[in-house]
Length: 314
Image 1 (cartoon, rainbow, N blue to C red):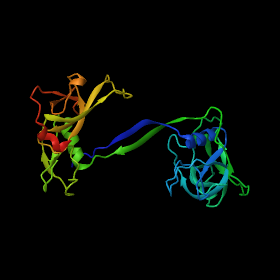
Image 2 (tube, rainbow, N blue to C red):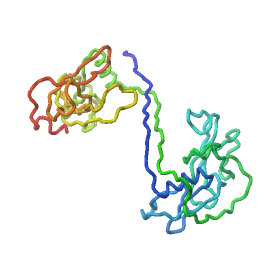
Image 3 (spheres, helix red, strand yellow):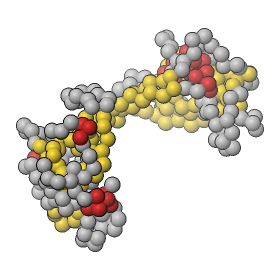
């Protein structure tokens, strides 16, 4: 039996967005140890606030201040915190309905153990020592003996030096197991071969193979070896340099339909100025060093393919 392939995979990128008046007020308020919600036309107070009523889709900007104490509505124990989670020790994820609010806020609860957490328990915010206008300004929740009773009070949402944008890293870490079809594809790349699979029903050839035909829903087990040359079907010019990628900008990423394939794959185009890449251009793979996949594709010098030959693969 062939060895089962696995590999750690990390997908990470920074996400930056500008903030409207509601989210700006909410995050700036957290920096100032104030929790703001928004009141809908039917009188409900939503925390965290949203810019549009989830029921009527009306724009809402009626800000109100709620308490920093609340009640746990439901919870789940986290025995093994991951890096960058709110607490480095076991804690509970909780939904907390702050006093004066009608919806619940998700955050961490610092508790000595799962037996110390219960639905209905009273909690309060523990503020971070250093606050900058983010949900992490709430370090966590902690147990609190005080009663409920706070009413939401109107707030104009004005603070000095308001937060107007938010940058947050998105990161996924997992172990990837490619399965039968993609394992065969990866083994082929190690031999500098590009392998696909043919659907036994519609006879389409898929590269990279998926293990099943997405149209017919049947397994694809018949091997196929399209290419290695192909045709640029469409492309984009990249003008932003990616972290850790040693490629000068601008450069071109393209969809390439390999000869005999019915699914376009994407790859970088090299060996030609970026502003001379065009639809229909014939290209071939370039392998470098001990790379397990083509480093890029370059022009073959053949005449451009007729549009009708690749139109269905756009």
